Image 1 (tube, rainbow, N blue to C red):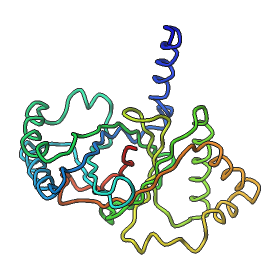
Image 2: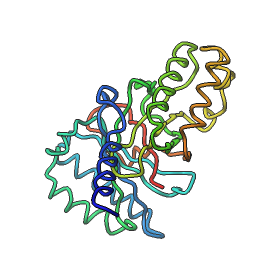
Image 3: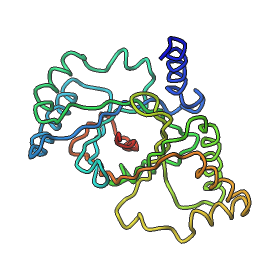
Image 4: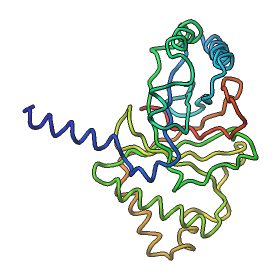
Length: 265
């Protein structure tokens, strides 16, 4: 590959590392790890996670760490751990001593982890989200949908999810959801939709279908155009169900557990 092409590729990669405008990332940045236990060592890994979260508590850590286990899809058996609602500058000055944190995790978690952790950064998109009510506490379950877009279609996709959010608010459709955009650590462009639920029964379709809701909000022509936008912009889609693991998490102050992004491919 010529030097010119390498430069162009680097510039494009840099542009896609910032998939949404700054005003759409008011909810902050999340740092998320994806990892598995070594075969037959899930119990040891979970015990190590508990010990490491206890270490954070003993250090009076101010960052919350939420943990989920993946129950369906290719990621079945994986764990996801993340800290959310940060500014980028927060990661230059962590709430606990980084060297000590690394040393403790090396003793309590890494011996039972297969292949180490894969880290990613996500931007939350509160302008397009309708979060789970905090007064209910963390949602026990969530359906996680990961959308990988065709290059050059990001703006169309964002416009479509903005219209969908407007339609849901207009019709008062019974749904809660959080949108995230991958900003670093994976394949771009990628967006993640998290749908929190109290239980599996809550995953049953509502009385009014999604298509019908869009039609009620905008009319058939506009509803069909929005759906067509998804068909045109999405290259692939995956889905998982994840379970909130409060027993493995650390929350320094009462707060709803943030929605979890999807696992890596």
